[in-house]
Image (tube, rainbow, N blue to C red; front, side):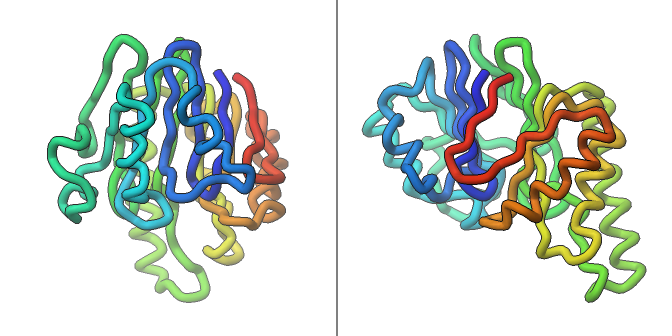
Length: 236
């Protein structure tokens, strides 16, 4: 299995019989998606965790003209926002499962809009968090708001833990815009689950800030995919 960083929360997951593109809204600097769209291995699956414009672009709906085998799997809020029609995709809410002979995709919750995804392919589990994180700003939030954000986040992670306690790869936000405690969510995540390799996301171009989580992840027993540019790749 090969995982390629596109940008922000966008990734390509390539398997022998399937390719999954998650949360695409813009291509990498070297246009890794558009260069390879017609040649990605196996059946093509395009998944979007929610409608926010840094996670979803209507442009992806045109890819079916290049790849007629494409299967779109979207969070249902994308349909509610009328960004795609009922017949253009399979829509999921928390708790739903979609599967075929190549992949199994289960929808978990979010602490913002939409859902997160647990993807199973080639005997491996890859978790894409979407906008699931311990979202709070210490400098702006009240103690009550911080406590509620944390309670909600930990409950969603416990729900995931009840389904599986081992994930081969976790694609999870490490977003320094949260302020001094921006690593709190990813710290709690790797403390609660056994993660083979931790892959940061949702950091825009703040590579150094995202990679600063490496020490904590490795101390928690994870490998860490240190991303230095769009188009970087790791193999599982």
